[in-house]
Length: 157
Image 1: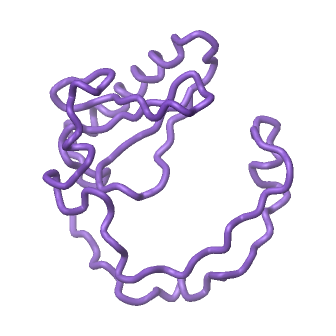
Image 2: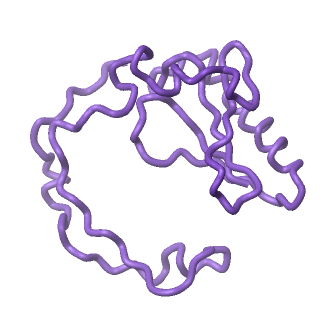
């Protein structure tokens, strides 16, 4: 797979975005859902203009500089030859938040087929483990942000 070159200037799509403007939160957004956990006035931050070329993400220079690759396996809740599961933070008011990550330095686009085939069953296994905790009825799988060049999935429950 060929990776596109890093843009040096905003694309036509990006130039049309309303960067810097305060945009209203749509009335039919997630804030209207009964399950949305916050109340009160929320504001969407203004979209910032792109920084081009994009700055390097954490771990972009390879496994030698990647905080995930350098993290001792002894700190993992669980690991095998290819994956690790770590607790995330201690300040959450959730019963558990864990992160599933490959031990090899991969992002989703370059995850080998063998690891990709393991991913679904491992996400299910992690969900079952989190759901076994007292008071956990549902578990959500998320991949938020793009601050690291090492694939990771959050599992709050």
